[in-house]
Length: 160
Ligand code: HEM
Image 1 (spheres, rainbow, N blue to C red):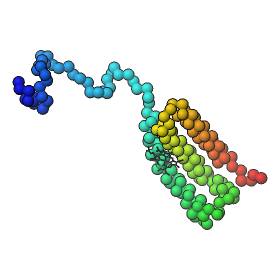
Image 2 (spheres, rainbow, N blue to C red):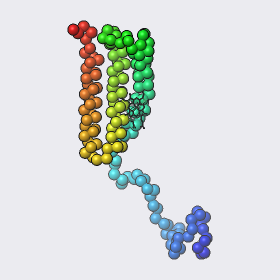
Image 3 (cartoon, rainbow, N blue to C red):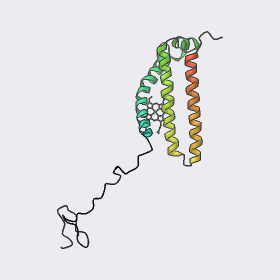
Image 4 (cartoon, rainbow, N blue to C red):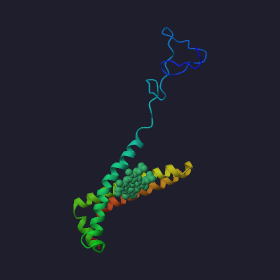
């Protein structure tokens, strides 16, 4: 067989000629990364996939919550000058605005914290630096969410 000759598959002849035929088939090579019954179960879970999805979904909800918030606080009814204790007290008298603000707090904090977690993972090169930055981030996040939630639910308009 001349060396320039090709087979029907377009692949040239292997050096030394093929020893495989119908009675002696070539061994099947599995596709790389193909999962078989023998391959170990992944222990990584789907956390990053759900995180990716959460960033998109919370982003969509935040557009409505944040733009609505800005419109009410800063544009309608005389703008920012109307904001004061009485204005806040009036709004938090309604469960609707309590839930609005609560949702905005939780989603913005979790969205922002998860986004910063990504930034830290991307930019902090030393394992120790990542550990400390994320420790600080998680502490600040939990603190802010708990304090904000407490304030929304325990706000007392008659405080002196
Ligand atoms: C108002 C509507 C918002 C939308 C539509 C939105 C959308 C998104 C999306 C889709 C991502 C993922 C980007 C990626 O994976 O490459 C992202 C990342 C991020 N978001 Fe938001 N977001 C919003 C509000 C916020 C708020 C209020 C905060 C802060 C509290 C925030 C902080 C971040 C941070 C720190 C990241 C990570 C940036 C990065 O990976 O480079 N976002 N945002």
